[in-house]
Each structure stands twice: as structure tokens, then as C-alpha cells.
Length: 304
Image (cartoon, rainbow, N blue to C red; front, side, top):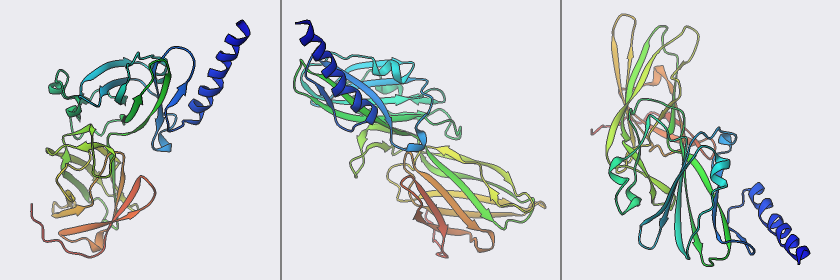
């Protein structure tokens, strides 16, 4: 009898541990032992692997009726993975966030409402350009109460990244500006048209582009700005940039560019001599997460 029990334990290890190490996409079923659910973390963007996890929040929602059935907070990914949820049979959606600390916010209005799907993740200061926080949503169907389920939540960045490069800017010119239509928040439990979770809010606000001075012999480069994605309902990202000469002459530029998405990395590459008061930027894919935006000479007739 003891030999059979030891065999069952080793069978559990052989089934579960390799899948955890390989970060398998599918739910893992353990045919022995207590039933329930455990959640582990993985990273959508490989560059985030190794990120220090300082805070983990988890919500579990019954997909059938939209009610919240569990909410937890842990100090590390390991602590979260050791949590065992006792679950009845049903279809569940799991929202996980990591490093969601100030200046990130969770909308007050959704903490006590029945429909957790309206939960909003935001920033108390849209121009904070804070360190990244992450979210992940995964679904699981529990069809046996005596089976232990292990599922993986693939974490992606809440914020987008924007960097501006301008070649040939005269020495000591200053650049300053704004992104005019960033979302006020992200609704992680709502789906985009492509089926991915995490839609930008329809409400918008402005994000400041910090002051930069052109250094002799160097490309004018804005420090990477971490900001909310483009607000929902807009087909372009709208920017306003000013270049100011040392003598105080101001040149204004209205720019439209493709939509920014959560987790996306966007690089604006401009030539000073080619810049126009109104510009439409087109996108070139650099990798799965990065786009380059360039001006190809189209002149935009803006309607703000």
C-alpha cells in the first residue's frame, strides 16, 4: 500500500513539474490527490523574463454569471504559485497583475460592483513614465472537482513605450510636446477585436513629452516614455511637438501616427529638414512588439 502511495506521489511530480518548467500553455490535470486550482506566471515578451515581482494580485471570476469568486494578494510569484484555490465545477476567468503599485490605480468604482469585468487599471499621473506593471488573463474550465488544475497566466505590460529620434536638429534647440489622446485606463477583462484581453478606455487625457535639448553632434533623442495606450475610438495617436530655437523661435508640429497598444514599443524617426507642420507617420514592424514610425512626405489636413 505504501509503495502504491509513493508511486502516486512520483506520478504527480512527473506530470506537473515538467509542465511548470516548460511553461506549457494548457491547463495541467493531476489525476491524484486533492482537487482545486493553482496559478503560475509566465511572460508574453521575452525581455521581461527575470523581472522582479514585488506584488501579485489575483481575481477569479465566474464567466457564466460574471461574479467574483476569489481575490488574493501575494508578495511574490512563488507565494502566488503555492496558493491552492478550492473550486467547484465551472468556467472561470483569472486576472493576474504584478507590480501594480503607485502611481498605478485600480478604479474605486469597481471594487464592490457585481460585474468585475468593468475593472479599470489606471495611472494617477498620466505623465509619470513609471516602471512597468503587468497583467494577464486566462480562462479555465473545471469539470472535475477531484482533479488538481494548474494554469499559467501570461503577463504583458500595461503601458506602451514611445521614443522620439530627430536627426539634424540644430545645436541647442529644445523639444517639448504632448501625446494628446492616451487612454485614462485599461480594462483588462474586456476583449479587443482580435480576441486579446485588455481594451483601452474611451476616455482620454494628455501625456507630457519631457523637455530635451539638442546636443552638438548628436541625434535629438527623447528618453523612452512609458504611457497608457491610445484611447479607444481613435484611429490614430495624436501628438503635438514644439522645437524652440535658442533665440526663442517656436516651430509647431501636429503629428498623427498609428494606434499604440498595451505592451507595444514605438519609435518615431524623423529628419529635421523634412519635418512639416502636419505629418502622418506610417509604421514599419521591427519585431513582435516594436514598430518604427516614419514620415514619408504625406501632408495631413488635421481635424482635431
